[in-house]
Image 1 (cartoon, rainbow, N blue to C red):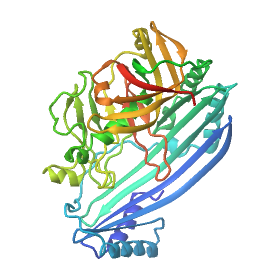
Image 2: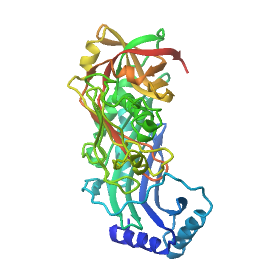
Image 3: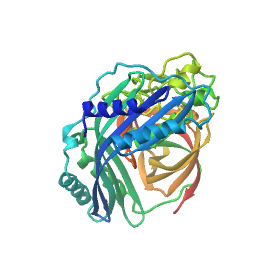
Image 4: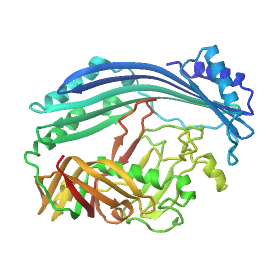
Length: 448
């Protein structure tokens, strides 16, 4: 890690080489470590230290970009010159807006020394315990920890900096016929209760001794937070961003102020909340703002980056992901939970299906937020208020808007962090409840 002062010197040096009208410099520096296990033993332990310097210049509304993983003076200058040269040949972007000036940022607690100093031996000890918990079954998974510095600076005087840590565990337990899955994480590794986490996953695979088929159709479902998070991710991409909203391909388009979900559904995005995975600014250097998207079922608003905000004469809400082609995206989503636990949901279900998570989920229709996918890693039949049989995985096709009009029970919300990172280890997460939903549409059975 370089620290705030050294990073600012790198960014200032890059800006000094630019001959463009406007220049933005982004710098990512990270140390990422990973312990991976398969067949119930650790087979990989690795660490990576890397740097990514991104240059973005603007000349006559033409944009040039370049990237390097070196920050010596020669490499910095070459990257800036390359970006300036590229900007001479790109097509003008008429709706481009000027870069922002200096901003003030709220402090967020995103760095934990105990995560930063967590050693390979520490990770191995945790992995051994969760492998031992599943004695008699095969276990697979990974345990990464990382420390990340992100800084942005531009020719208008803006400079933003953040230091963060993250830790997460993916844990899969397999028998001859079935599997169980779980993921957990936090910026603070000591907040991960991996023993209870592992115990629940092993318990679920033990429940799957014989798999059974069930006829497709509409069933009441109980969705664990992993499945709810998958739903929420698609709502984010399909409709909670301003670009989709402005292009009339969002389920929110033309419906602000209308009730589109149930009274018990309130959804918001808040990148500053300590209950999530906080981060103070977006990838344009704009401070994060809390945005209420759905309030008691009523469509309230969407998130903006600078370009989409300018189209409506508004200010950005701090939701740029660094690419205007995809538009803004809410990366820190929350669903207001309730007071019901999963046991109560099961007891109040005459006949239904319990779902651990979804897999291979894809969108069908953005206007109705319809998706299709499959259940995975623990699907069970509920009869007369109790789980009676493990089931083969089921395919579903479902409008999420309709589903969220039929939610009968909500548990307290829990944090479900993003757990996969193959480039810059920038982790986000959602805080969501388990849900009981009536009349979920299952269309087929998979015995693969």
